[in-house]
Image (cartoon, rainbow, N blue to C red):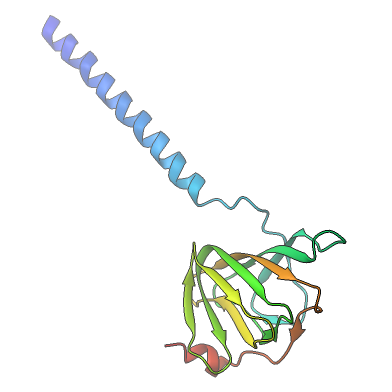
Length: 161
């Protein structure tokens, strides 16, 4: 009987240790998938299709001539074709998305990618049909604001290869 009690106590310790290990592991995995920036407000601008959230993190001012924003796209959401007169850098933080410059093939982008949108180049970006997509965008403003062009057509979006 003494050996049986000893085995039961040992088994309880093993089970408790495993539960603790998995609780810590799951917490770390969940924490890695949580954005450090607020999702922001649903954009009401007429420059995209689908649901896009936008959070202005830092607006341009007299010392820093660029704005920084966090944008998050529902699956299938995309911005219209547009141009940044001074360029833009996108730091992809979540999901899988598309980036395309006029006349070039679509690039599939994912968490951890950095995209440099060159000054004056017509392009669009957005989420894939099956995944949301988020990024931090740094946009210089000294040459003017974003120039919005036409919608990305359903055909252009569907023909992503």
